[in-house]
Image (cartoon, rainbow over all chains, first blue to last red; front, side, top):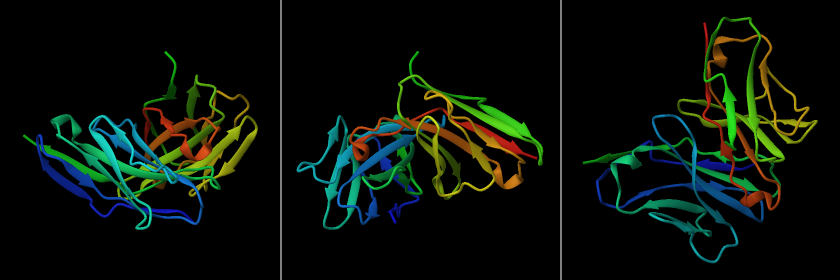
Length: 114
Length: 115
Protein backbone atom coordinates (compact mmCIF):
# COMPACT_ATOMS: atom_id res chain seq x y z
CA UNK A 1 0.00 0.00 0.00
CA UNK A 2 1.10 3.51 -0.68
CA UNK A 3 1.51 6.00 2.11
CA UNK A 4 2.47 9.67 2.18
CA UNK A 5 3.65 11.39 5.35
CA UNK A 6 3.92 15.11 5.91
CA UNK A 7 5.25 15.65 9.42
CA UNK A 8 4.93 19.44 9.58
CA UNK A 9 1.35 20.52 10.32
CA UNK A 10 2.39 24.18 10.13
CA UNK A 11 5.41 26.17 9.00
CA UNK A 12 6.34 29.84 9.15
CA UNK A 13 8.79 31.62 6.85
CA UNK A 14 9.86 35.20 6.47
CA UNK A 15 9.04 36.89 3.19
CA UNK A 16 11.85 36.53 0.60
CA UNK A 17 13.42 33.57 2.41
CA UNK A 18 13.43 29.96 1.22
CA UNK A 19 11.44 27.22 2.93
CA UNK A 20 11.43 23.43 2.70
CA UNK A 21 8.28 21.39 3.19
CA UNK A 22 8.91 17.76 4.04
CA UNK A 23 7.34 14.72 2.43
CA UNK A 24 8.22 11.06 2.85
CA UNK A 25 6.53 8.19 1.11
CA UNK A 26 6.28 4.44 1.09
CA UNK A 27 5.42 2.28 -1.88
CA UNK A 28 6.14 -1.11 -3.39
CA UNK A 29 5.65 0.11 -6.95
CA UNK A 30 8.88 0.04 -8.99
CA UNK A 31 7.96 3.31 -10.68
CA UNK A 32 5.83 6.15 -9.46
CA UNK A 33 5.22 9.85 -9.66
CA UNK A 34 5.37 12.41 -6.89
CA UNK A 35 3.32 15.59 -6.96
CA UNK A 36 2.88 18.74 -4.93
CA UNK A 37 -0.32 20.75 -4.79
CA UNK A 38 -1.10 24.12 -3.27
CA UNK A 39 -4.44 24.91 -1.69
CA UNK A 40 -4.93 28.61 -0.91
CA UNK A 41 -7.62 29.82 1.46
CA UNK A 42 -10.01 30.09 -1.48
CA UNK A 43 -10.01 26.29 -1.55
CA UNK A 44 -8.95 25.24 -5.04
CA UNK A 45 -6.22 22.65 -5.56
CA UNK A 46 -3.39 23.89 -7.75
CA UNK A 47 -0.84 21.51 -9.26
CA UNK A 48 2.70 22.80 -8.66
CA UNK A 49 5.36 20.28 -9.61
CA UNK A 50 5.96 16.66 -10.59
CA UNK A 51 8.90 14.28 -10.06
CA UNK A 52 9.18 10.87 -11.68
CA UNK A 53 10.88 8.11 -9.74
CA UNK A 54 13.33 7.45 -12.56
CA UNK A 55 14.09 11.07 -13.32
CA UNK A 56 17.78 11.74 -12.94
CA UNK A 57 17.42 15.39 -12.06
CA UNK A 58 15.32 17.13 -9.45
CA UNK A 59 12.28 18.86 -10.88
CA UNK A 60 12.05 22.64 -10.93
CA UNK A 61 9.19 24.97 -11.83
CA UNK A 62 9.96 28.63 -11.33
CA UNK A 63 10.43 29.23 -7.60
CA UNK A 64 9.47 25.63 -6.80
CA UNK A 65 11.94 22.79 -6.76
CA UNK A 66 11.67 19.25 -5.54
CA UNK A 67 14.49 17.77 -3.48
CA UNK A 68 14.10 14.10 -4.41
CA UNK A 69 16.09 11.54 -2.44
CA UNK A 70 14.96 8.15 -3.67
CA UNK A 71 16.97 6.04 -1.23
CA UNK A 72 15.48 7.97 1.68
CA UNK A 73 12.02 7.98 0.06
CA UNK A 74 11.67 11.70 0.47
CA UNK A 75 10.37 14.35 -1.90
CA UNK A 76 10.65 17.70 -0.19
CA UNK A 77 9.30 20.86 -1.78
CA UNK A 78 11.56 23.89 -1.72
CA UNK A 79 10.05 27.31 -2.27
CA UNK A 80 12.61 30.02 -2.90
CA UNK A 81 12.11 33.74 -2.29
CA UNK A 82 8.81 33.27 -0.45
CA UNK A 83 6.00 35.67 -1.19
CA UNK A 84 2.94 36.53 0.86
CA UNK A 85 0.82 34.78 -1.76
CA UNK A 86 2.59 31.51 -0.97
CA UNK A 87 0.66 31.28 2.29
CA UNK A 88 -1.50 28.18 1.79
CA UNK A 89 -1.86 24.48 2.51
CA UNK A 90 0.57 22.30 0.60
CA UNK A 91 -0.09 18.65 -0.16
CA UNK A 92 2.34 16.00 -1.27
CA UNK A 93 0.87 13.15 -3.34
CA UNK A 94 2.01 9.99 -5.08
CA UNK A 95 0.72 7.87 -7.92
CA UNK A 96 2.17 4.52 -8.93
CA UNK A 97 1.95 2.48 -12.10
CA UNK A 98 -0.06 -0.16 -10.32
CA UNK A 99 -2.52 2.22 -8.78
CA UNK A 100 -5.23 4.18 -10.47
CA UNK A 101 -5.60 6.65 -7.65
CA UNK A 102 -3.36 9.24 -6.07
CA UNK A 103 -2.56 9.17 -2.35
CA UNK A 104 -2.23 12.45 -0.48
CA UNK A 105 -0.47 13.46 2.68
CA UNK A 106 -2.29 15.35 5.43
CA UNK A 107 -0.79 18.64 4.30
CA UNK A 108 1.40 21.44 5.69
CA UNK A 109 0.04 24.92 6.32
CA UNK A 110 2.63 27.50 5.29
CA UNK A 111 2.41 31.06 6.56
CA UNK A 112 4.65 33.71 5.04
CA UNK A 113 5.37 36.61 7.38
CA UNK A 114 5.93 40.13 6.02
CA UNK B 1 -13.74 27.79 -20.91
CA UNK B 2 -12.16 24.37 -20.85
CA UNK B 3 -11.61 22.76 -17.49
CA UNK B 4 -13.39 20.90 -14.76
CA UNK B 5 -16.46 22.31 -13.09
CA UNK B 6 -18.36 21.18 -10.03
CA UNK B 7 -21.87 22.06 -9.00
CA UNK B 8 -23.22 23.18 -6.70
CA UNK B 9 -20.44 25.05 -4.92
CA UNK B 10 -22.34 24.97 -1.63
CA UNK B 11 -25.11 22.67 -0.47
CA UNK B 12 -27.00 22.32 2.78
CA UNK B 13 -29.29 19.34 3.25
CA UNK B 14 -30.78 17.19 5.97
CA UNK B 15 -29.92 13.70 7.13
CA UNK B 16 -31.64 10.98 5.15
CA UNK B 17 -31.98 13.03 1.98
CA UNK B 18 -30.46 12.09 -1.34
CA UNK B 19 -28.05 14.57 -2.81
CA UNK B 20 -26.09 14.51 -6.06
CA UNK B 21 -22.90 16.42 -6.72
CA UNK B 22 -22.09 17.08 -10.34
CA UNK B 23 -18.74 17.08 -12.09
CA UNK B 24 -18.07 17.98 -15.72
CA UNK B 25 -14.76 18.13 -17.57
CA UNK B 26 -13.96 19.34 -21.06
CA UNK B 27 -10.49 17.84 -21.52
CA UNK B 28 -11.74 14.41 -22.61
CA UNK B 29 -9.66 12.92 -19.81
CA UNK B 30 -10.32 9.23 -19.38
CA UNK B 31 -9.82 9.20 -15.61
CA UNK B 32 -12.07 10.97 -13.14
CA UNK B 33 -12.02 10.94 -9.35
CA UNK B 34 -14.03 11.98 -6.33
CA UNK B 35 -12.31 12.95 -3.09
CA UNK B 36 -13.48 14.23 0.22
CA UNK B 37 -11.40 16.59 2.29
CA UNK B 38 -11.70 16.62 6.06
CA UNK B 39 -9.52 18.39 8.60
CA UNK B 40 -6.56 16.22 9.54
CA UNK B 41 -7.16 13.67 6.78
CA UNK B 42 -6.02 15.45 3.66
CA UNK B 43 -7.85 14.16 0.61
CA UNK B 44 -9.33 10.69 0.61
CA UNK B 45 -10.49 8.95 -2.52
CA UNK B 46 -14.16 7.94 -2.62
CA UNK B 47 -14.54 6.52 -6.14
CA UNK B 48 -12.78 6.76 -9.42
CA UNK B 49 -13.50 5.95 -13.04
CA UNK B 50 -11.03 4.85 -15.70
CA UNK B 51 -13.47 5.39 -18.59
CA UNK B 52 -17.16 5.63 -19.33
CA UNK B 53 -19.07 2.79 -17.65
CA UNK B 54 -15.99 1.76 -15.62
CA UNK B 55 -15.94 2.73 -11.96
CA UNK B 56 -14.17 1.42 -8.89
CA UNK B 57 -14.06 2.02 -5.16
CA UNK B 58 -11.47 4.13 -3.45
CA UNK B 59 -10.50 4.40 0.18
CA UNK B 60 -13.86 5.57 1.62
CA UNK B 61 -16.73 4.45 -0.69
CA UNK B 62 -19.42 3.57 1.86
CA UNK B 63 -22.58 5.64 1.53
CA UNK B 64 -21.75 6.91 -1.96
CA UNK B 65 -22.78 5.90 -5.46
CA UNK B 66 -21.26 6.99 -8.77
CA UNK B 67 -22.03 6.56 -12.42
CA UNK B 68 -20.32 7.51 -15.63
CA UNK B 69 -22.45 7.17 -18.70
CA UNK B 70 -20.48 9.85 -20.57
CA UNK B 71 -16.77 10.54 -20.51
CA UNK B 72 -17.22 14.15 -19.48
CA UNK B 73 -19.58 13.65 -16.51
CA UNK B 74 -19.02 11.90 -13.21
CA UNK B 75 -21.82 12.53 -10.69
CA UNK B 76 -21.52 11.51 -7.04
CA UNK B 77 -24.68 10.61 -5.14
CA UNK B 78 -25.21 10.34 -1.42
CA UNK B 79 -28.25 8.09 -1.31
CA UNK B 80 -29.16 8.81 2.33
CA UNK B 81 -27.00 11.59 3.68
CA UNK B 82 -25.50 11.35 7.17
CA UNK B 83 -23.81 14.04 9.26
CA UNK B 84 -20.48 12.24 8.91
CA UNK B 85 -20.63 13.04 5.20
CA UNK B 86 -20.38 16.76 5.89
CA UNK B 87 -17.19 17.63 4.04
CA UNK B 88 -15.65 19.39 1.09
CA UNK B 89 -15.86 17.26 -2.04
CA UNK B 90 -13.43 17.55 -4.91
CA UNK B 91 -13.72 16.12 -8.37
CA UNK B 92 -10.56 15.61 -10.41
CA UNK B 93 -9.55 14.28 -13.81
CA UNK B 94 -6.37 13.11 -15.48
CA UNK B 95 -5.14 11.65 -18.70
CA UNK B 96 -4.22 7.98 -18.91
CA UNK B 97 -1.06 7.91 -20.98
CA UNK B 98 1.94 7.36 -18.70
CA UNK B 99 -0.39 7.10 -15.76
CA UNK B 100 2.11 7.70 -13.02
CA UNK B 101 3.23 11.06 -14.39
CA UNK B 102 -0.22 12.44 -14.99
CA UNK B 103 -1.20 15.15 -12.51
CA UNK B 104 -4.80 15.32 -11.49
CA UNK B 105 -6.62 18.54 -12.23
CA UNK B 106 -9.19 19.54 -9.66
CA UNK B 107 -12.49 21.32 -9.67
CA UNK B 108 -13.13 24.12 -7.19
CA UNK B 109 -14.89 21.82 -4.74
CA UNK B 110 -18.37 21.49 -3.26
CA UNK B 111 -18.86 22.36 0.39
CA UNK B 112 -21.59 20.05 1.66
CA UNK B 113 -23.23 20.46 5.06
CA UNK B 114 -25.66 17.87 6.38
CA UNK B 115 -27.82 18.94 9.28
